[in-house]
Length: 194
Image (cartoon, rainbow, N blue to C red; front, top):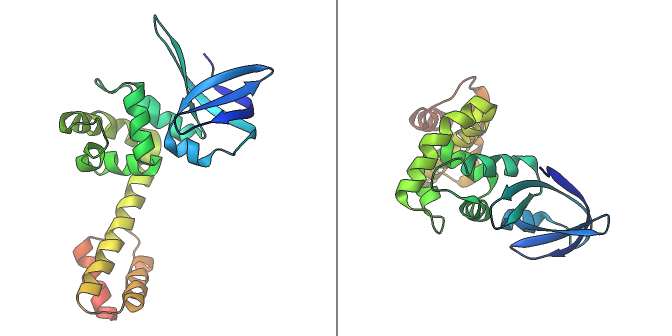
């Protein structure tokens, strides 16, 4: 199996890239996220996933191993093929996929073209434990923490506090915490500072 290609990027479009490795051009399907990070041309390394079917030998290319890992997890879910996984990774960043699965936010996945509610639920159900076991828990909790402080900031602004004062109060509370804090407790503690 081809695990990566290191050569010269000779062609790129939003859906595929061609890398010349020793005089052989390799055609790879890519996501929009990979497309956005690729150079215009020149030296390039893409991590690959190879799909061999009766009628085709298809390469999928990824700029980093994390995106390839998420792709491989997604295609293990029944009903999610390589093109659907590529569509998910074109619509969402790797971090957004982790967050959606880790927080069981089915609506984020459901918003991707071609992903129905049942498939989105299946992705969350089947991958949440796998990704947590592989050490992505820190990613999930960091994203949850990030959304909690944004919600707290929004609530304080709606209560009439200036944005910069509210931000300082929220950050002060978060820095003093050694463990996760609920949204309600974060708002209350921030109000005491304000």
